[in-house]
Length: 93
Image 1 (cartoon, rainbow, N blue to C red):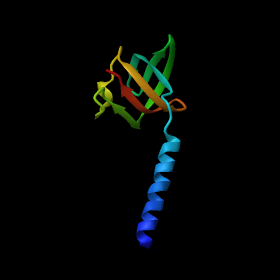
Image 2: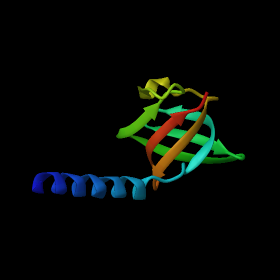
Image 3: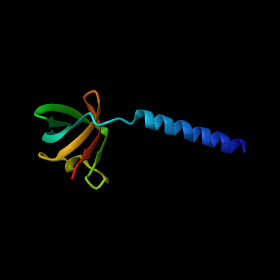
Image 4: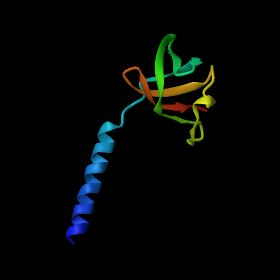
């Protein structure tokens, strides 16, 4: 019984933290440039450049995690960033 209570409390804490750190995309727009370790996205005509790191997660339009090489100029994307470092990129259909 005690283990179950501890497990439920831990699960509740993890869910609370996960929900608290979920946010809206930093930028949504068209990819204007993909260069080695950076991506530039134009949102309403204003470009924003983000650094791609090993921990940047990139998702294809079908929701499957994909590789950096899948990013191309002209794609519509959503970028979640921490400062100038891209954390997550969703490629829109």
